[in-house]
Structures are given as structure tokens and as C-alpha cells.
Image 1 (tube, rainbow, N blue to C red):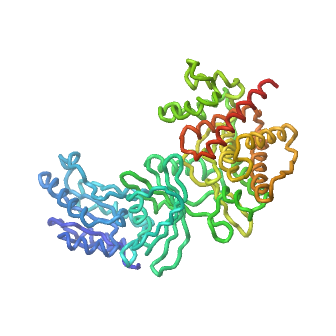
Image 2 (cartoon, rainbow, N blue to C red):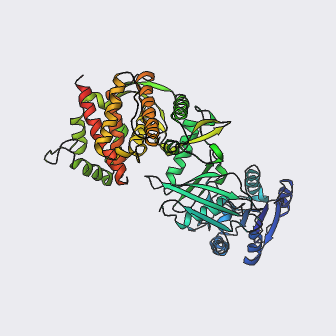
Image 3 (cartoon, rainbow, N blue to C red):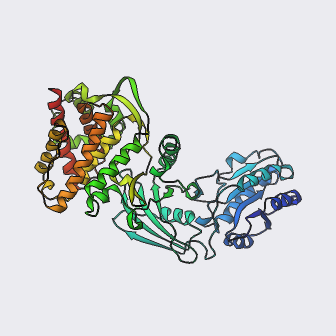
Length: 530
């Protein structure tokens, strides 16, 4: 749409508009005065409104004007109007009752990328302060509502039973208001409650646009934390080809949810692909996985590695947040009851005390720190196809921070055991998983000697991929970072306990997680005697 952005004056109340008119003209904005609800509705439906200015009268009239405006506009604003700037302007000082006016923003959804909350400008003689605000709007990226009136259809392709609340639908309408429709595929929900979606937008001609990745947070702070972590820890260190571009201008927040949009990495055949899907698909070879993981570790190696003067307490690095959450702590305690990894109920110690007492000091102390992704499971590693070369792209930096240097390595290994081994025939039983892990330990001691798997071709391929990934993760820790195996095993154990504390793993995955913990406990005991 080529029309100039529209600035609306809601009831001029005898203010001289000459200076403001000239300023809008120079800024290539259209200025229009509306005096009633019907006029305001017509202008909003045109889809080009970028700003609404509400002139305020004397103190005694201020409250009445704000109340009348908010009640009027709330009836006609749509989610697509979330990025409209609202400016309250007065030629006097701040109204005496301004702080007690209550609800001055009639929009339930707001833009996340600019300070779009209603702004009060005081001593606005000849609109000088308002003009400054309008100038700040000219450089931002903004979409106008498409001629069909915003998103006319939202198609949901439900892969799991993940609930999709009403407000996220409204957030999507705000983010993609320039499109005629969108198709929403939401394959999973994270342990934190966030919903991951793939969005296929269609333009006003009904043609497909580039797909994007959307994450919907039930926690506003987590959404902001991800952006902050991205700008602080990712951009300065890792090449842009290894992370998605953040389209900040499509980020919106509501009362309960916050929506973040990033570019979607396009894999082979123009489809979205994750490392987990590569592992399960026979279309991708062990050799391709080998090259892909090598590139991943090379990219992550850009994060600086620093030695800490004093030993790192791994328990606090991995489980401190768990033990401040009563619900998570109880779930973890219940997992310990049957196998008795860290003592039984007859022991009067707390679970933290039991863990510290059971594990040797060497498995609970570390020496190196580095920036880590923080949640490096296989679904957070996308695959990008660049001329036939498959390169890793990291997404979801909500837990990125400087922490124990191998946290990403043990997180991915735990994911390989818990989810990567699912569907591999005989490994559905505890003894099969235990044997698989014990064999890996023997190979580690023997320098990673290759072993042939006797399973059928399909399972052999999947097992081969998982085995190779775990080998490369351990080699990076032992050879590249100089981490002792007992420290690696301790970190992997603590990380798996954190995963178990959520209590949301399906039965098969939970079986593999508990078997992995049992294996690690035994491995640590054997290593401590060496």
C-alpha cells in the first residue's frame, strides 16, 4: 500500500494545528482530525494509521478526555492496530491527576520492538514535543494492514495436542497483519511451557511468502531475556550463518503471552529440518551427521573459554534453580525413591545433601567457563542448506549465559540418550540402553575405536548417528577443552536430573533418562577409584 502514514488528531479542542500540519507535510505524513467514533473507525479500517494524538485540556477536563477516548477507541481497535503510537499532548505541566487516571492504553496487544506505550508530552507549545515524537516514527519498519482487512484466515495444522490459546492467535494477527492469511504448524511445546510454531504466510495475492519460526512465551521476561542474550552473547561471537536473523518488527506482546518471530532456516528440499529429524531419517547418512556436528562444534568454539580462579560448584550451575522450586524438587525426590541413586528415605539428609554426599568431589567441581547456548537439544539445532552443504543454525537463546564450559555438550548427549535412542528396537529396554552406554565408555577408554552395530540397517543408521554424536561431544570435552571424564560424567548426571525434575517426559523417554542416571552414577563410582 503506497499511501502516506496517517496521523490522527482526536478532537482538536481549539488547538492551532498550523505548525503540526507543516511538520507532518515535511515528514510525508497525512494529518487528519476526527471528532467522533464513526470517523475514527473509518480511518483505522484504512490500515494506514501510525499515530493517534489526543490533546488534553485543563486539569479538571483531563480525566474526562482520557476516559472518553479510551472507552471509544477500545471498541474499534483490532489486534492489527497494536503498533499504533498513542500520544497525549498538553500545553501545560503534567496534569495533577495523571498518575491516578488508570487505564490510559486501550490496546490489549502492543508492539514489543518500540516503546509503544501511550506517551504523555507536556509543555507541548506549538506541538514541539509531539513533532519530536513523530520524527522518531519515520525511521522504523512498519507494516500496514492489507487491503482485505488483516488476516482473514488462520489455518492450524496440529501435529500434537499442544493447546493454542486465544491471545497467541491475536498476537499472530498483529504480527502478520500485512498478509491475507497464515498457516500455523505447531509441532511441540517446550518444558518451560513455550510453544514453537512454523508459520507459512500468504500475501495479498494468495502466494506463499518465506516461512518463519515463531516462539510464543507464557512469560514476558523470558522473551525479553532471549533477545538480550542474543545481542549480548551470540551476535558478537558467532557468524550470522549459524543463527537466525531476528525480525524485531514482528514481535508483539499481550497480557499473558509474548510472541517472537525469527527467520526460518531452510533445509534440503526447501523444508524446515532439525538435527533430531536428521537422526531419525534414513535420508541422511552418518557421514553427513559427522560433518554437521563438526561444523556445530566449530561454531560454538567461537565462544571464549576462560579458566576460573576457584573451582566451579557444578551442583549450583545445574540444579540451583531446581532446588528453589518446591514442585520440581519434589518430582526429583520421587524419581530417586525407587532406584535410590543417592540414598533412601531412611537418610535424614535433604536430596541436595544426599547428592553431594554420594558423588565424589571431582565430579562436582569444574575449572572452565564459557558462554553456552544453555538448552542445546536436537530441536534447537536447525539445518540450513547452503548449496548442498548442511550447516547448523542455533535457535532459542533464552538460557544462554556464561556457565560451565561443557553444559552444551552434556545437554546434547543427554538428549541423544533420552530421545535420540527412541524407536531403536532392542534399546527400548533398560538393559539395552545400559549396554549401549557401557560400550561407549569402553570406546572412550580405548580412544574411540569404531565398533560395527549388528542391528538391522534402519536401526543401525540411527544408532550410528547417535553413537557418533556422543563420541564427538566427548572428544571435544576431553581433547579440546581438557575436561576430566569424571567431571563430564558429573555434569551429564546433574543435567539429566534437571530434565527429570520437570516431570513431563513420556514413559519411554523417562525410562531412558533414569537408566542414563543409573549408568552415570556407576560410571562416576568407577572413575573415582581409578
